[in-house]
Image 1: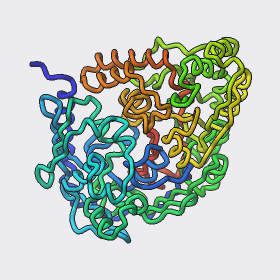
Image 2 (image 1 turned 60 degrees about the vertical axis):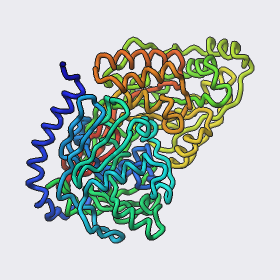
Image 3 (image 1 turned 90 degrees about the vertical axis):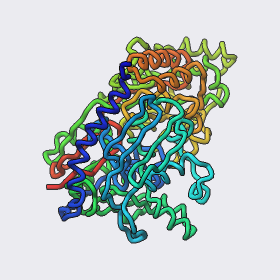
Image 4 (image 1 turned 180 degrees about the vertical axis):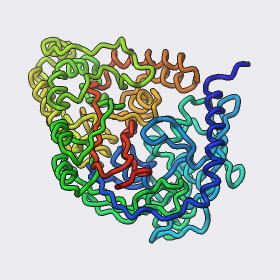
Length: 544
């Protein structure tokens, strides 16, 4: 019988992984060495809520923890979406697509910190602990430090993974309840960062399980030193990192700078060498600076306005259509994105495979919007809240301005919107709790798979996670589930395009724009790459 695409790809990946592992295995023993005595300061846009990657869903948290402190079994290549071996040097997939066996890398050391001194190297116990904590409500550490795992549950992995078993000290077997096409891509994502079971035991015995979120320990390129909220995060280069030559900085400092104009000034004064999220108005001046490089690429992102369908009257389709139709999106793209944005019509960007090119946005039509409100019994309008993000994002460089423009547009059809904002961590927490009527938010793809848009942002399993609109629509959700369970890309594309058609009919959120991503960086910095999946990474990055 002809092998399906998923199994062929998995076996090819496994062979490539084995080849890479044989090279890496020979050099792991020599990984520890002198790190260049260089310091890089990164002007970041916000304070992370913590350093326990499984708890969070934002780029602020992922940049501060996932790609500095931790590794995963498989990882995305720098600057791309291709999966390569990580803490697993290879993996095999069973013929039925339901069993994944990971062969772990030998000689990998957990970080030695002021608060933890490992007595053993990384092994299967750490992998089992990491995933059992998310899978098993009775896991002792989870009981000691009860938190939710929004990504893990948003993608249905809590239902997909039947069990995770240690076969031997360097082999772990994952058994799934059904085949899952994006499984390996998902395992490279942030929530799957591998924790130290030994460190967790130490915290449990000390009665300090929650410290895992404030004092992280991983196998990654940088060792956490200190964090002062709203000010700085300090890391040291990891001299024992298992990837030879990947650590080129002895010190990495995050200078937390929420104001984009201040970030620009710090970059120009060489107070930081890399900055996040420039405002569109700053692009031209930064390009003109002889000491600054400005690489850019089309963004794998979407900025949108979510409607909370659990709040009346957003539960009515006519109301959502009216609110969408009343927004002058062309004016928003001109004013907010200033030439660096493209109008969005779908719940995913055009660069994502399975994107449905046939979808058309509703026209800007305030008069028709009024008629739709009248049809919904709201001819005299209504009051609602409109939440505006406090941080810049590539997908929304100025949420406050966007909110003010939407507020003015809605006022023309009799809808009085009160603009609300909170500190970023609080904003996300309250949005998960469903406090908003509508909110500006967005997404940068995490793994290159359509499921990461349709399932993660709109699936029923994601209603308490990144499905901020709390929209659970069975015909849509069934198509997403079918897409996950088949490995044939042409068939998956059919399911996902049908799902996009339903999205356009039901309009649980209003797509606004996709934007171009810019990465301002000092010309003294070497090999900094734009990450299409939306975070910043400093492994492999150096300073002249």
